[in-house]
Length: 83
Image 1 (cartoon, helix red, strand yellow):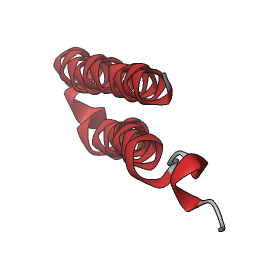
Image 2 (cartoon, rainbow, N blue to C red):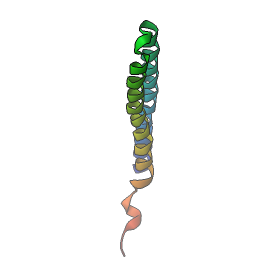
Image 3 (spheres, rainbow, N blue to C red):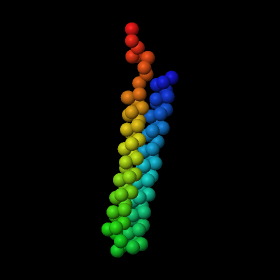
Image 4 (cartoon, rainbow, N blue to C red):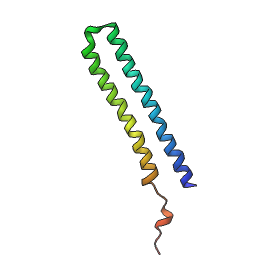
């Protein structure tokens, strides 16, 4: 039962990768639209886009980290009993 719960937890943790992908797409799409509307602010917009990309990518890195923690670190204690 614990293994099944761990598998569900790992699957739920990796769903965040889809959200991060959509977020990165939104950041880059907004950059393209803003540069197309006002090319003189391209450098400033690019700086903001890099910041948004980095923050969104951080979430994308936390999701697999949680999945690995759930699957490898949290183990059942029934194998570690003392005799």
